Amino acid sequence: MRLVAAVFLIVLGACGSATDSSAPHVDDAGGDMEVMWRLASEPQGSELEVRAEFGSSGLCRTFKKWAVDESSSEVWVQAIVTQSSTEECTDDLVMERRTIRLEEPLGTRRLTGCDSNNVDASCDMIAPDETAEAAEPSERS
Image: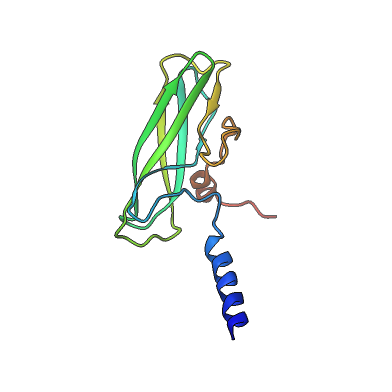
């Protein structure tokens, strides 16, 4: 009987420790957290068209702000949402799109911050615009 209980606790512990590494982390008390973002279009001079994507339902997660830090070699952008500790979340996709105006054109500076779980993530890839694709009828022969 003790062996069965020990195996059950080990399995239960292993299941409880499995997490989705792409999901933003926030403690049970709620609070601010970073979410992934992507470029929505090619950078134009000192303007970046960006889009944050996060799961939410109603008041569970709400978009709070964009944060930008610029240096001579890097532009770091962060998308911040607020997680409610009292609302249960679903995986409904919410998109927050914004044009960010930099102090200087992006030029050859490295764009960073798009994935808080992977600091080496490439942030210069353009995300497809799902809303435009959904609005266009598909052509069939």
